[in-house]
Image (cartoon, rainbow over all chains, first blue to last red; front, side, top):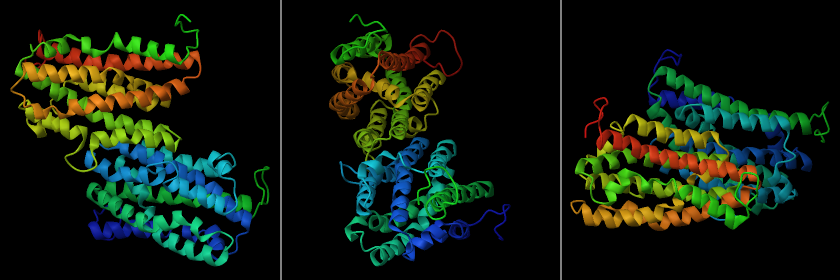
Length: 244
Length: 244
């Protein structure tokens, strides 16, 4: 086996292929994240990351509902439905979206302004919407494979918590609940998803589609940061939206 | 107010309009149901109703996931998500789909055959798929409005339980759990849905779209029984699928 498109990879090699393709494109290496984790973002640059990323967060339950709608299997749906509940909560004020809005308050933003998504950069919106449309039109298998960036989420969340506590002490540590919750949850989510992907990618062609879906997802995450960087770190040109 | 398309109806009149349009088209008046409730269906006719209707049941969590995917509001999604959980259950063996498969066993069918949906009549499949496609492509408001046939579900379920216990004593009463569960749940579901519809149908045109969505849904339910009737009560002609 050499990992070419013609080979059907056994489980361990397929998982390693996914991890390898994802890892080398994951947005932890983006310069916006590097600046963040080195403590070099200004208050506004940190705020804008929180504000823009919130739009991505709001797309998660929507794409997960689309994934649910693609499955004919109640057992799969029972497994996947907690993702909606994790983000929406079971009651008002619970769940990942609420935690993110607390984070927004923690960095000094107005909760309602962030929740309204009115100041989200156009390119961030395009990329996040592209993710939803990809999931809407892809197969269930590809949609699940695109979630596998969660492989890498626990590490970036752990790193982020340490970096924020060290470099941005003006953000109260108890505002970082979203990141903390995701460390454990993303690991479990990735295990569930990779198990599904491995079992259902039953041909070399399907394995390649899964790799391509994961790569597409890394491009989406990366583009969010490209947009934020262009607007708030190096706003060389652009409309009034570039305010850094 | 005379209920024409040009008028914006206040809440009570709009709800009554919906109820009225729905009630006069609801499938409790279909001759297949009339035969069922009068105890005049043969064992096979009852079985085939259970088998074919199961395909409709399997579409419910799919269309509810699509409805979730259409909402930008975590509060709405928190309200609606129980519908998926009601049908799928939180663990294997729970939920409406499992209860329906118990019913299938109760009428003497093979659980796996019913679950596989391989013997579903073509027209039943077309109608059920049309419901999913309607929900997929309609607005959130219309999709929710199409669920309002639940107004009438508690009555038909109550009638059905009594009729089955009386006329089909060979079906063990403890197999009727699905119908019992729906009496209370459908009432709550309809209240939630009508509240949403009334609040969001903010123009005469939107009110008319809601009425049209509900009528479309009644047509879908009615067509299921037309197909079952043609195949199993009066199979005058047709391919091998018509076995009554």
